[in-house]
Image: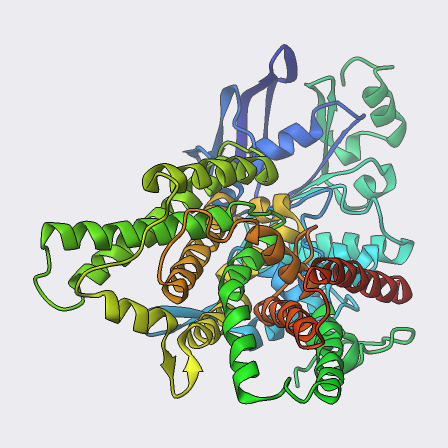
Amino acid sequence: MALLELKNVTKDFGAIRALNDVSFSVEPGQVVGLMGDNGAGKSTLVKIMSGIFQPTTGSLELDGKAAHIHSPGEARSLGIETVYQDLALADNLSAADNIFLGRELKRHIGPFRFLRRREMNARAVELFGELKSETRASDLVRSMSGGQRQAVAIARTRLADAKIILMDEPTAAISVRQVAEVLGLIHRLKDAGIAVILISHRMPDVFAVCERVIVMRRGTKVADKPISQTSPEEVTALITGARETA
Amino acid sequence: MMSDTVQGFSNVRRTRFWQKGFLASQSAYVLAALIVLIIIMALASPNFLTGGNIGNIVRNFSFIAIAALGMTLVIITGGIDLSVGSTMALTATVTSLTMVGLNGAGFHPFPGSALIISLAAGLGTAGLIGFLNGFAIAKLKLSPFVTTLGTLSIVRGLAYVTTYGRGTAPAGPDKELFLALTSGQIAGIPVGFVYLIAIALIMWTALNHTAWGRHVYAIGGNESAGRLTGVNVDRVKIQVYMLSALAAGFNGIIISGWLGSAPANLATAYELTIIAAAVIGGANLAGGVGGAAGAIIGCILIEVIRNGLVLARVDPYWQQTLVGCIIVAAVLVDRFRSLRNT
């Protein structure tokens, strides 16, 4: 049974049809590449899956049940985590604060709830260890490098038991070594049975970790095939429109 | 401390203790400046450190400091509340009018009852003003500056309308209790200062040790990140504007107790002094930075300067000019510091 299934999703912004009748499904533990040129509808698709937008028509199913996701918080509680392209970090807070933002660990004292700072810091240190990232939990995000910020954004998705992680350009702004680390991480997520949808412009990344690639062009899905049956040349042709469909 | 060392930080030095936390904040620099200023004053004027004068200073800065705490919350979220001066006036007016009204109606079932109802009416008014500010800003997405500029005028107008421009004085059987609770002393300490410290401690705890406090800072740092991570941004924003209005209203009631009446022009233009105190104390108008201690330090600094100028027999009108210089100096020092660090 499919973990996540999109059925005939269409999204209009006024007169602009950003997504036109898009359907696909993702199996548990599957790593799917989502490719397309700027304006192809990748980000809109991600935002529909992560609860920021609702489809104009069409529906989403999670574990075979219809899912109406109205907010990012709702998506997370259903097991859909997202690494946003701009990372969605508050610069003025520490790494640990950012990881736990919106789902802080609390201790009840009478009617009050106080932060469990020590536990949150320790968990953050643990997560950075798992990601093999040289990031200090108590440092402010403001003073961090691109790769460290990326690590904070990714560590956030590992807090709860996610079923599927959406990554919007996770390797766009980081060093060569860090790209290898992120790709290694995606492999480990897959081994743990977590599905990943990787939105990327970087052909080598998609071919290195994905088992399937979906290509979008001008709001329409033009290809959805196993990596083993395609090539970077074909995908490039599909993205640019040199080939209509595959 | 925490097991914070991860593998191989070959080229990254650990942040030293004076480079982070309170010691690295603008509040700490301003506190140092304040201590220097107090020492200079004490040497220059034998009257400065007398009990009576210290009592004066404490009472005077308590008049704006509670409102400055509320203002700091709003500024941390990246907003501004220009309506606090008017809210002070209308809250004091409503409280006073309710007391007069209850007295006229002969309503006084038990001692303190008229006072409780009057305070509830006054603070309820303040809470409503704050709610309307917050609702317009969070839900209708109006700019905080324009919204609260509007309420500044609306609320001040209401204070004049309800009193025909004359102001009003608390009256009735609870009047003595009202005066004791607003302008009395506990063990020689003005009650206003006691309220201030209690409220500041609660605010410090809320900002640093609750999820709500993290959300207030996160909204100022990156509002959309807050939304994406499931923070209820709109609700927190409405709450900070309500708290700002309640703090201002409470401060207004204290001032009216000290004055013995609530004139309709009470606290006119106080919003600017309050914002100045918050900013001098380290609240950043761009959002994301500020704290309870800083707001109080800013208020003390402004009052010490005013007081010092009076003792030195300098024309007190110089105060505004000096406070302006200090605002610019405080943000300049902070700017140079952050330039050096990046």
